[in-house]
Structure formats: C-alpha cells, structure tokens
Amino acid sequence: MDIEQQAVEGNGLLGMKTVRESTGGSTKKVPTSMETDIGKMKTRRTKRMIFSISDVPPIPATLTLAFQHVLQSMAKLLSGAIIFSDLVCASDQEDIKTKILSSTMLSTGLATFFVTTVGCRLPIFQGPSFTYIIPLITMATMSEWKCPSQEDLRGIYANTTTNYTLNHRGMIPVPDDVILSRIHTVMGSLMLAEVIHALIGATGCAGFLLRFIGPVTIVPAISLAALFLFKVSLKYSQMHWGVAFLTMAIGVTLSLYLRHVTIPCPFWTPNRGFHIIRSKFHTVYAVLISILMGWGISAILTLSGALSSEPESPQYYARTDSRTYVIRDSGWFYVPYPGQFGMFTFNAGVFSSFLVSSLLSIIDSIADYSACARICHVPPPPAHAVNRGVAVEGVMSIITGGLGIGHATSSFGGNIGTIGLTKVASRRVMQVAGVLFIVFSFLPKIGAVFVTVPYPVVGGIMVVLDGLLVGVALSNLQPVDLSSTRNLAIIGMSLFVGLMMPYWAETTTTGLNTGNTKADSLLKVLVSNPMFIGGGLACILDNTVRGTRKERGLDWWEEDTAHHPGHETSTEYPYEEGSDVYEPLFIPESWKRSKWTRFFPVIPNYH
Image (cartoon, rainbow, N blue to C red; front, side, top):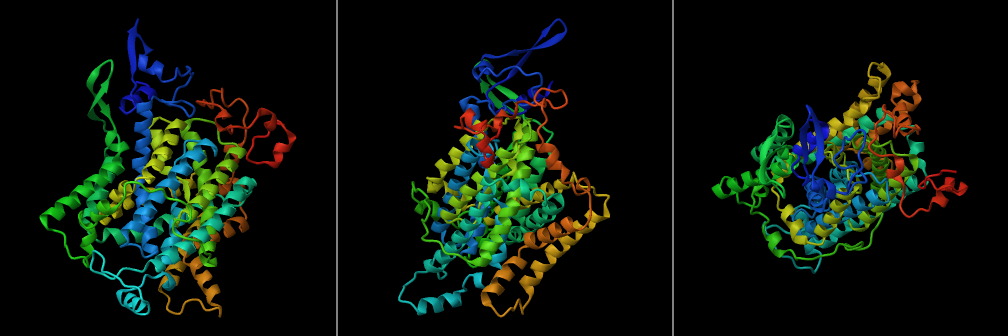
C-alpha cells in the first residue's frame, strides 16, 4: 500500500477511492469515475499528496475538509476572544463578548482568504496570533489595566447620574464607557503597529530582518511567549480541575496515544453504497472531540448538582447553564464593521509592545511559509511571495484592529500539520474555510454557542494546544549547533532573564520611577513582555558574540530560499508542483519581465 492509498483510506473524508486490480502478478492502479471527476489530475512520477495546491477537490470533499480546519481552529479563536474580553473588563458583558468573537471570525476568514489568494498563495490558515496575546496578558497585570472592583464601581456610579441594574450574577456591571475606552486604546495602538508590519512586507524588508534574526533569537522569544500562556490556562482550569484534566487527557489520548490507530467508520460512495472504512477520524478531530466530551462532562456535573450554582463561586463558570441566556438573547444576523466600538485612541506603551509582537509574528510567519512548502512538496517560497504574504498579513491585521479586536492575525502552524496528516494541500480548501468563517461571523448565535463553553474546558484544551506550541518553538533549534557552548549560553540566559524580569515587574511594589508617568508606563509594558526581554537579549547576544552563520543556524533560510534550477524535475527534489504556485494573480507577464519590477518587491522580477 503506497502513501497515497494510505492517506485516502485513512481519511474517509474525500469522497474518492483508489482501486487496485491484479494484472499478471503485479498491481495496477485503476482510477474510478469519481477520481476522473476530481479534475483529471495529471499523472506525476511521484505522487505524495492526494490534492496538490492547485488541485480543486470535489465540492463535498472541499466543504468537509474546510469545515475541519474551521473546527480545529475554533478553540484558539475562542480563547483569544475571552482573553481580550477579560482585559477590557467585559467578562460579564456577554453581548460584547459575542461581538468580539464574531469580529474575530470575520478577521480570520478575511485574512485566510486573501493570504491564500493574493498573499503568499500557500494554503496557510490565518487566525489570532499568540504573539499578540502576550501583551494583553502582561497589560492585565498592570494597575492601570486592572478591572474595577465592586466597591470601585459603587463609587463610579455614585459620581454619575447613570442608573444600573445587577447582572445575572447579582453584581454591579462595569460601565460601557470603561470597556469602550480600553478597546479604543488597543485598537489605535494595534493599527499603527500593523501599518509598520505591512510596510515591512511591501518594501521587501522581511528578508533584511532575517540577516539578524535567526533560530537562536526565535526559539527563546516564541518559547517564552508560549510558556507565558500558562497564566491563562491556569485561570480557566482552576475553576474545576477535574473537568480541565479530563478534557486535556482526552485530547492527549486521541492525538498522541491513538495516533497510529485506525477505527472503523461507516461511509457511503455511489459505487459501493454504505460500507465500513478504516479512518483516523479521532486524530483529525481530536480538538473538537475533546471540547465536546469536556462539555458533556460539565453537563453531567451540572445536572447532578455537583457544581455550585452560586454566581460568586469559581465553579459557576464550569456549569453549562451559567450563560445559556446569551444564546437566547443573541440576534440571528449581525455584520461586524470597522469602528463598531467607536473611534480609536493611542498609547505609546501598548504600541511598543504590539510592535515587538509584530516583528516576531513576521519571523514566525516566514518560518511557517517554509514549513508549509515542505509539507506540500513544492519549492521554497521566493522572495516576492514572502514579501507579499507579510504585506497582506499586515493589511488584514489593520482591519482586525479597526474591528476592535486586541490581537492581530498570523499563520497557524497547527493547520500545516493537518495538511500533512490529510495529504490535502488544495488552496481551494483553505479559501472555502475562510469563506465559512466569514459566513459564521454574520450569525451571532453561532458565536454565542461557543461563548458558553465552560471555562475549565477551555483551560484544558489550552494545555494541549499551548503545550504543542512550546514544542513547535523548540523545533526551530534543528539547524542550530547545540554542541556549541556559545549557543547554549545565549539560549539559556535569554530564557532565564525572560522569565525573571516580567516576574519582577509584576511583583515589585516600588516599580519603575523615571520621574515621568508615561515613561514609567511604557517601560513597565516592555519589561513585562517576556518576548521583548528574552528575544531582545538573544538577538543582541547572537549578533555580537562571534559565531559562524552555520553555527548560528542562519544558513537554513538561505539554503531554502535560494533558487535551484531543475528542482522541479530532479530526483533529489521531487516536487509535486513548480514555483508557479507562487505567481501573483492579475499581473501581466510583461510587467514581470520589466526592469521596473525590481522596485516592487511583491512582484516577481524575470528581467
């Protein structure tokens, strides 16, 4: 059984099959009529993917595979929306949380569609970037971003003529003015940082950054960001450790312990009707199954009376009926739009933190482009595709800020792994996934359903996803010489200082005192950001301590992005498709051969 047949029979989702018949002691592959309808894909010498980037699967397969990417990413979207809602003190304002989640789905859908269509043109899913979540977490620890207590709220309402009614938990609600003012500050700061992000891609500066930022810088920065997310997971998991642990255990069992196991699943095809196939369905949908089973466990505990019904109790958010009114009160149709929360403002400290996150996001996206190209068995992305992808990500993140969301969009490494698992790299599948998210964003009741997920379930699934993120960050050490004392010292010190300084900034009572309040606030935001401290220290040491480019791992991208004629057909580099998969749309061939294209880094230059 070859790679393609294993992938098809282990999937059961593609609506196609491969038949082999015996011909004189040898096996011959006979395409079925359904395979012919797929698009009459040309026969290749080496076929590693069921659907390559330019292939268009049948409509049922396209919808199923696109919906799989949507469900796989929904947990990240939900956690990002909840983190931002908590920062702006909207944890009990379910209508605002629903709007934030709907806006997150809209920005995710737009970014995914445009990056795959006019950006780098690789099938890369876009969603809330964890590098932008860290500034939100660090800001939440600062005194000026602390949400007002019940006593503070009484004082706020006493000085105004505004009346209030207790919310569903019997508590005084945070005034809308407080929530909106925080959203405005994050909006403006993020949008300005993302203008720089887009310019870096449009001007071709992304390649320049790679000369100085290599794996020795990337690993401490991204690892610290992923490790710092433990605070969020702890916050949600401690509401009921049992539900959180069981959710995590189910996810680990399905995705790791049973990853080599195929289970029988009923399936239907026109030729064979209903029959049983062997599938790794449980592995492909491990995240979704874990969330649903964790939700079911919370429902059982709720019905049995094991969870407290007191709104002040931490276990209240572990109940499945604590926020069901959100679904009832949500409308059926709503269109998120830029400026829906009002006009944006600016804060230098928040902007600086987002700018650091933006630079790290660019490097992370470039690494994802290379990984996706390897998974899809196509040549490494050329410079014009990388620049175009970074520029489009920046533009989409500007729109994200305008929608009032506190996190930009970036490439998702987890969905790249899904491509390798399903052997489906079709660009059309990812475009449809983007369209599905756009459609869902217009239906608030769908967002309201996900808002009601019990918090311990979110915490448990974050342990699995963020734990994987730490492992992915450490995998960037592959091209680095780990026998070098130089590299080990830089990485170790950067991780140590990156954990130490944010802890000091959070626990110190004296704080920073420069004599200028705004300067103190700016410095505290930067010092509280582990990516800035650890990644910045690693970058300085890596570029000032003597070491060869090979020792530092800086030759990995140079080797990948160099153009090697003949790679498309050589036996050493058996690609599924050529570099034409990166060609931009709507650009005439005459422009590509013009000497003026060297001034436009987003267009290929064949002059």
